[in-house]
Length: 138
Image (cartoon, rainbow, N blue to C red):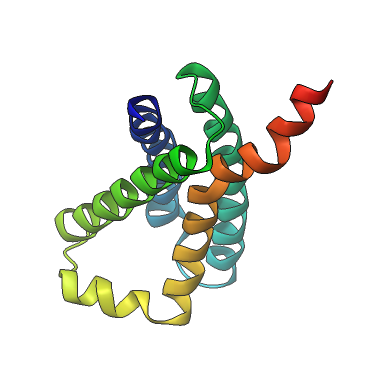
């Protein structure tokens, strides 16, 4: 279990690092309008693809067993740390209160933000169920 928790922390660091960099570019250079929407779509797809790779890298690096409970814990740790860090960034850098951030999450924009994050959090378990069993059969 310790390997899964440690892998979840590193998984968070990798995903948050790229997300923070892409978010900084978005907030600094993209602005509002149609380009922002296209950038957010590209950013989301890039983070999903990177999350798949990062989950696999962390699993291999920390030798996380292909047990569903451990893999779900790994994803949960990543997701919990990610939401906590996003709350801290929203409060500290963007001046949003926690209430403002929470109310945004129950909107369509919030759903479109949190759904890909939840999907990425499931990647360790999905890899255990669908990718790794095929690799061991070879």
